[in-house]
Amino acid sequence: MDDKYIAILGGLVGSSFTIVVTKVFEYYQTSQLHKLSLKKELFIRKLNVFEKTVSYLTIAHTSITNMAVLLKTAMNENVTFTDEQSKDIFDRLQKNIDQVYQVTQDMAGSIDLYIDLKHDHKEVEDTQRFWELLGTINQLAHDVNFGYDLLKTATTEDDYRKMEIAIDLNEKALAKKVENLVDFSNSMRHKYLSMTSLLREELKSYE
Image (tube, rainbow, N blue to C red):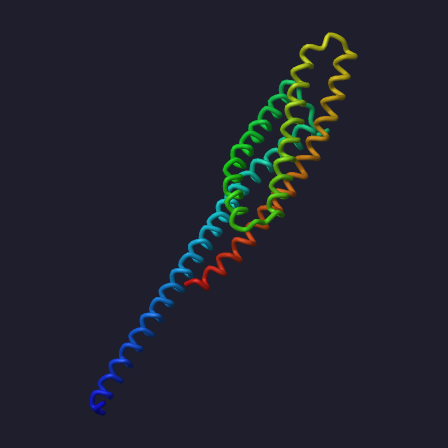
């Protein structure tokens, strides 16, 4: 074969090989960019979940702290409240409990998404403990309120005294559980704040 044709053929083969290599590289580069984009999108979703959870926990923690303040007011030994005043305090406490329940329903959806992404059983345990404490508090608050309603029906001094003792025991148990929940919700909030800060820093690597 003529050297001229060999050179032309060699040039064509070389050009074709260059084009193929370039296309393969472009495909690989596009594929990597697509994967990186998906990872970034997933990462941003995680960050959004943490930010929402912190927001929900902050609202819940405020209501829980209000519960503790109301209980300290109701159980202040230096202040005497009538039964009606005490009932009013515990009615307001019940409203705070209801608000926390409402907020934690939104928080549940947020944390469920987080668990789907991270499969972190520790977070499941924490949220379960949170709701268990809240459920116990709700039951104790209901019992206290019911006790104050029963006081109105007492027909003897002895009955009245027994009801007061039952209410006092429930109030003390309630105060302890609320303090536990205050500490626990504050711990959860700080943990999510720290993790959110770390995620924000890590997000910079995708920029």
